[in-house]
Image (cartoon, rainbow, N blue to C red; front, side):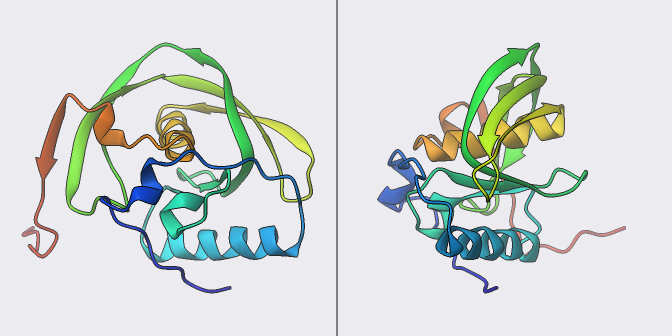
Length: 158
């Protein structure tokens, strides 16, 4: 596994629609492993392949209940609404108030090409929607009603 460089907002790859994965092979497995390592090293709750410069429909998410690897994910059902701030590893220091579904059902494939469904509520629903948006060239700021900036170099005082 290797850490990959996170693509920052402004790079045109983040605005492109990702291509469907058709081959489930070692190249894909390496990408998934690298994305997982990169996400955890940057304290993220999710990471999409375009964020590491790869235009494929691949994402990893961990909203606190364990890692979920998603290949060719698509949202098949949404329920309710939630509004909260969210950020993005590709937009460090920026957060936006975004309305997302409270609950989502996502169809995807695992690293071996097996179809599965994941149901996410609250933070997991938000993370799934956020990462699937990345696969469609959409950033959280496109949905945000308010953007706030936080200086990441500031130390919090307890």
